[in-house]
Image (tube, rainbow, N blue to C red; front, side, top):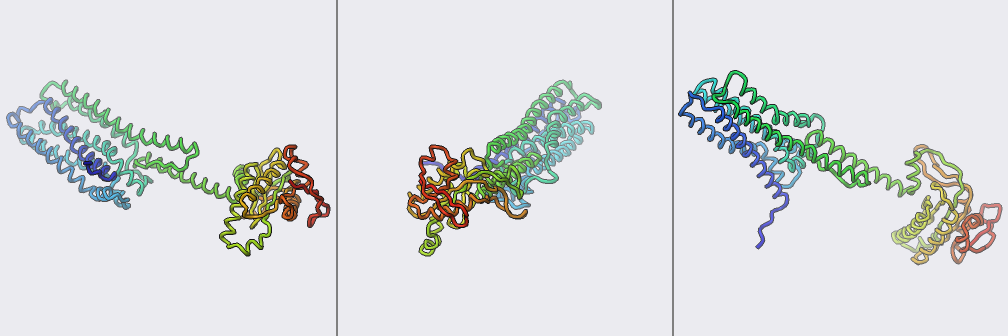
Length: 493
């Protein structure tokens, strides 16, 4: 029979709670052990004598009481944090602020209990012995307390990561920070060097508080300094290196074009601000990509890229280009007998074929006009052979629409000099092409609707295309197009 599997959030909460309990009790016991060793090496004052058991019993009892009371006190301070964390809900602003104080609260609780112990045991020593003996005991306990408080704070930041990550989502690090990298560095220095060196000074400088040879005490202080220095430096290095490693990985993905990534903000210092800034940057890039995609869908990818590279202005140039015009046959009657939703679906499938054929050959679908579309080859992107590309696209569009069997259409293709650029006003404009070839292509489209293969191309287009494409075309007729003074030679495939 399988055991009961607890929810993931509950297991995480349980591990975090056990981590806090182990941290609080373990740090106090370790600190008390170091203090006990220092006191033993320092020697029992002669005035205390056989009554030393009173001091030992008081110290042992206080350690037990402080371990229990410290856990209860911390749990009381962070009771609201435990509730929302266990319930798997987002904290309120006030709850997040309280949760971010968790390492500080644990350090304050630990420091307060050590201060009380220092006063209590120092007083007992003064009663049993002398004021100088009490001063020596109090200083040793105070050094142990400072060490324990610093180590508790650094370790609590590590244990509290799951809670602080959720709290920082509601209250990201901004403005005046309660935690800074500089403060962590100073605290680590105090653990690794400051407190042990202070203990060395107290052991060797007057007044002589020890009753024995100070060498064992100095050795123990050196060992404590090495161990605490390694532990504190390890916690600091992990607190700084791990978030920076995650940042490096995310930024590497961003440089490769990913904008769907996010860095978990799990630090209340400048590192957390950097994590939040990277997330804001990625959000901005994602929004830019979305706007660029929408812009490209409305005006075409080539036009969007042209605007991004050269800026948006009312400018353009005259160049050789080929215009391709597509129009649905008898669209008025089609609209009268077809429901609007069905008509839209048919037109969208037609335009999908147009876009696919034109994009594949480097052209631009310049605009959709109801049931018609104007496509341009040679602007804004210059093509080596726009005429061949346009004729090939015309045949591909015609074949795709015939295969669907939903619509009938006419296609006209014409080449010549056109103006290609932005048209409108400084507040609203669009990229377009203007010139005789555009009008000629539209007029050829009207005549192409009566041609069996539904495509007509002008002389200029067929003359400009390569030999392989020209083989698909044959002479049709010389047509007098509406609005033009000269007849136009027309070719069909």
